[in-house]
Image 1 (cartoon, rainbow, N blue to C red):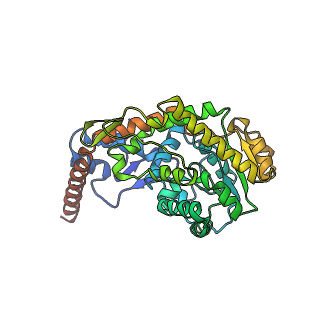
Image 2 (spheres, rainbow, N blue to C red):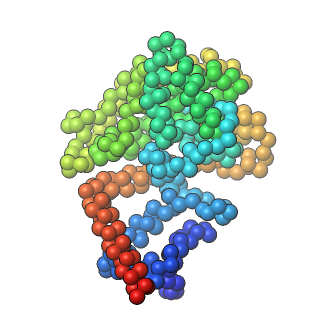
Image 3 (cartoon, rainbow, N blue to C red):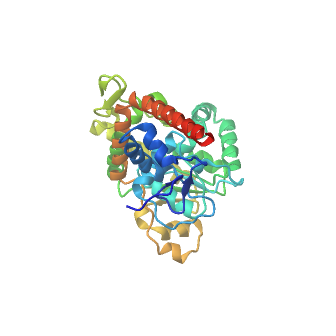
Length: 372
């Protein structure tokens, strides 16, 4: 194998290289000695897995390489914890021009990738979490339901536009589509759909099962995902039963739980309730919004109908394959990773503290050796 120059740690990302800060021993040698035999290989493997998710090319470095679907799925989940902050960087102030009315698992993440290609900045569930807006949207829903008061919604809308967001997508933001359409009469409303309500509810149940880790230990300690349930209950009087311990959840370890089944999808009646909600939202929008502003869209139909609806003339883009993000296999890989991290939860902080302390000691030793 080719030798690696001392003081340099190569990373498998286009045009990206991390340099050591004048350390005589070099990061590679220092880490090997600091953490003991074999430890470097283990940590290097973890770093190589995390790097494609967290790393961004340096400014001025361009790459046309497609991002793997699994990396996008990891970024999707990391966004819930505020670890994909590049999505929410402050942008130029712009008006909201596209309002998403589709539920999750109707191709919303593929649609998001398409809208980003068209220059949009998308506000979705992850944005609500990253910007600390969840509680405000809950309060806004309650005030609107009680007295049609849109004061908080107007404030949130101005904040979104100040940050450069031009489109909203996904559940539960889709529940506000009609209200936002009234506030922004020039904006168009796009409802992504699947081939049938049955196909949608089956896929929705499937992804809720895959991502049920968010309602179980330890992830439920870190993230309150029940705000989505409270919003849909407020706006549509829809009861969404969450799994509870010990009826629906096992606890193999004190800090690790497994959801055995989801009561919200456990029976045909429960699934039918979701289909009714989906139809009610669609019918309400179709009755309220003029046809030139509203369109239902199946991502399988590709670019052409989307571009026509948005008034975009781009034959080259229309001929490209439509983005495909968050397939089931990718989300399954995310779920397995989260389970492994959760099972070893008590170990990770100890390993981190140990490795940092050893690194600090070795770097101090290198400095002393250099001064000597």
